Amino acid sequence: MAYLGIDVGGTKIAAGIVGGDGEVLERLQLPTPDGDADTVFAVIEECVRRLDTEVDAVGVASAGPLDLRAGTVSPVNIPEWRGFPLRDRVRRLFPDRDVVLANDGLCMALGEHWVGAGRGTDDLIGLVVSTGVGGGLVLGGRAYPGRTGNAGHIGHTAVDDEPGCPCGGVGCVEVRASGPNLVTWARSQGWTAPEGADAKALAEAATAGNEIAMAAFERSGRAVGMAIAATAVMFDLELAVVGGGVAQAGELLFAPIRAAVERHAKLTYVSGLRVVSAELGKDAGIVGAASLVARPATMPTPPE
Image (cartoon, rainbow, N blue to C red):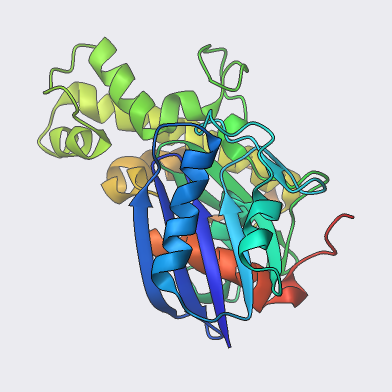
């Protein structure tokens, strides 16, 4: 059996052929372009054309919000797509195959639950800290998409009163923790770096002892940890798996995350909550998307 996993994000669109054991057999990644809705979708078509492999079914992970019932997506970080009929557009490419859509954070969690850091754990949240901050829940060993498909969208959990989130809300984790916002905050505090410097450059500065860069990661990790603690208390979780580009900073991010979890998750039933690094890296979204169709027993009945 072979499955196609498609992972759509604000900076890249990836697709891969995944075997029934969760192994990525072939992979392709292209930048998410600027342009209109069809220009963005054309990258998916290009990935499908270049992979050119017969598959049994297709799973699609997309940044959200999304509407599972309608099969549409309106990603905060892809402004060209508002109510975009992603599921139906992909179905046109595979008219004789099942196509299942889910939030990219949920797919990351499912991938890690299947063959990554969440193996053997039935109650977890997966987080992607990257261009944005996404998340997804696995509860009782099954995906939990929620009523509309957006459950676990931890990046838009409020942790303070700081304005400026593209979603229109106030105090969102994403404003503190996403890569671009980390850099923006550090520059506002006096960090000097060449134009185009990103979160990786900020992490290098922090590792070299730059106090502003270190403070940026402390601030980011604290916000992520607070959101994890609140979610764990709500859903009785035992594990948080954190991945994404910003998470590559390692203990610069994980140390303040764990400190915040320790400080805020005090109830006995979450006292053993663990925070671990994701294992699947850039393949998490692809594997998780494939999991939507490769492991149907983990998925709830889709809305009609």
